[in-house]
Image 1 (spheres, rainbow, N blue to C red):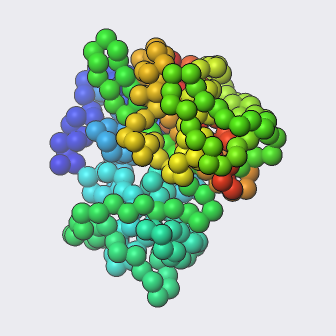
Image 2 (image 1 turned 180 degrees about the horizontal axis):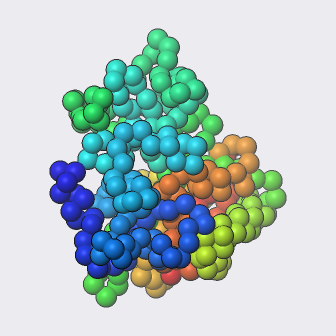
Length: 339
């Protein structure tokens, strides 16, 4: 299966503009395309993927030579685990008899984590310790093969913050849509007191919890993100007023209905809202996050996650809306991207 996958990846003289690839900052233009970040090897006459790639609903990681990585992978001081087919894992896994907890972005958690409303403890090396051990989703051997699949996908939440990511590429001319999301959580201090952030054309939200817009944090996150894009040779993102309204609406929606997901309890997504208000785009993405201590820290939560970072560094995007609200004892953040 791994060989077959690599045969799909390594193809002769083509471009892959619909594939999201994550590469480190500061990569030179001589070896990486700033749009699809696929390296082109003139000697072998092949396309080489590098870094994190999102394909068919799964994340894969490739080294600088285009070789797919498996097993434990360290990226930006965080650890991730990919099985022998290269698929990045999430949830609770057992590797060589030891249990580990991976959040929705695939990063290994340490310290206290919440799984199915129960608290567990992980050591500094990520191994679950103590008398209570959560039921694992999958068991792997030393060769990264799945030896048992319990057909469940646990949600691992750090007791202090949460992150998730999703990207959606929609080509209006063909009607095809691909979606992926990023999520994270954090709070901030500079506020604007308002009773609601409703958007014309979308359902009015209840006022179960008072909210305040963290306008200063929104601006700082935009500046931090554009500084990273500039370092990587990408164009800065322009703040779009409609996307700003939708981002604030999404953050408030999660606060008022007390959930944290790219899909609302009613089964809708931000793409449905954009379509409902007549917003035109060909590609869009969303990052969400929350925490209880600092609103600007939301940026670091996103940046330290491959999926979220990929959204912020996506060269296809040129517009963004950032909505950071405080309510229900937390800071809720949303980034909405488009072209």
